Length: 116
View 1 (cartoon, rainbow, N blue to C red):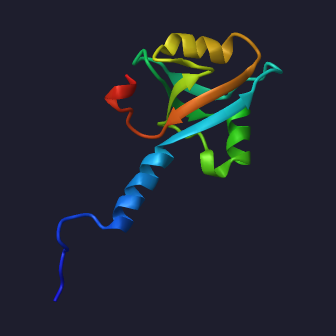
View 2 (cartoon, rainbow, N blue to C red):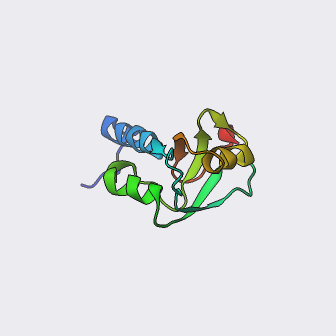
């Protein structure tokens, strides 16, 4: 006989969900102290995050080549830059106005309301 189960998720299924949730958030450190471009097209229209639209030649692509498990991909949201969050304009300025090391926190997929 075939059974769909009791309806309660197994330990393995719960662990997989937690692992997937953990993989949604990741951290990127980019050294822009030489003034190079990041090489991404960004949409800041939600006013809170920086949505990565396109990854082109630049520091982000170099990061992706060196960090295959933490690649920045189109659709990812930058939610913190050097401690600045919830302000897309300030985060954008932090990424572009001065050459420096950038510590970024990103989310893959939809951004929960708690971040907005």
